[in-house]
Length: 355
Image 1 (cartoon, rainbow, N blue to C red):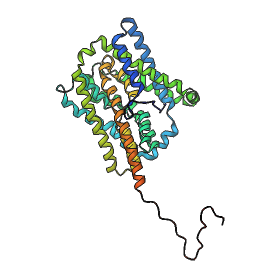
Image 2 (tube, rainbow, N blue to C red):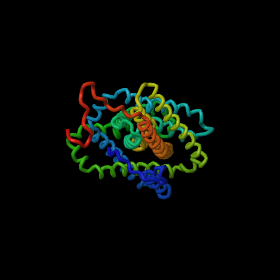
Image 3 (cartoon, rainbow, N blue to C red):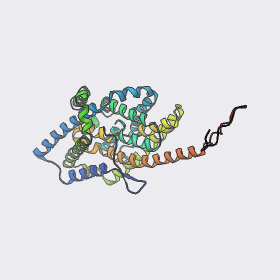
Image 4 (cartoon, helix red, strand yellow):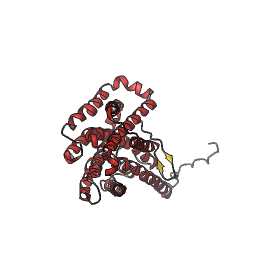
């Protein structure tokens, strides 16, 4: 996958991801001009094919060498997986007590799904690099999380969300296998033949990735608009959702940072664990939501879209703070004492003079 996510600074401390702006524009377009009738069926079919293509490319791009190298740091990867697929879901289940007083049942289903989505790759690497953490570990941790999530996210959703997720039914497992897992495996098997093509056309395929996700968003929200999504989600409910997600992100940033310290990880590893263990992938979550929630995907992806932009803004500030801390620690470290010549030996000549 293309691991560089372009960002603009607006203002200097507040990153605004241009792709998020495109997502918002797609939601507005779906609200004003949703596909209906035969057009809706055609757009839905194209979106299904786009999701299959997306996961084929995911499988084809996964480097076997990178995955094997990551096994050397298995404790770190297990810690990130525990944050992503254990701590996050437990917090999501705890939020069930907020229904219906703070969250509506539909938004809670989306929040719980958010807690089951795998971690990011691109932004985790970028922020780990800015904070002077263990970048190779962040690369492997994000890749492992995405790979595990293809299986873990649908299984956890079936177990924890079940039939209450507006359109989530027993045949979702079959949909996951046919639309996500089969293309992913096909991509892995064909990597030896298509890897060169993927490298040569990396930029173009990046547009295919993001265009596919935009199509999924348009399809989900377009269907949601025809079903009255904006009549069910009031401004007060959205404000409550943002507040709950802010608390969720703060808890995960704290747990991943101090939990890694208790486990004995060094500072560079703790940075990688914090940024990989506290994030959720919009690129992986949106296609999965379209398959798992069907008609209810419009409401279900709202929490994930909000959390995605929130994690970018907060982690950008945090990464810069970690970088400044690293600079201060380097300046505070005492310089090593000058080497002294052993007794009876001649001292080295001053710099700039011949021997």
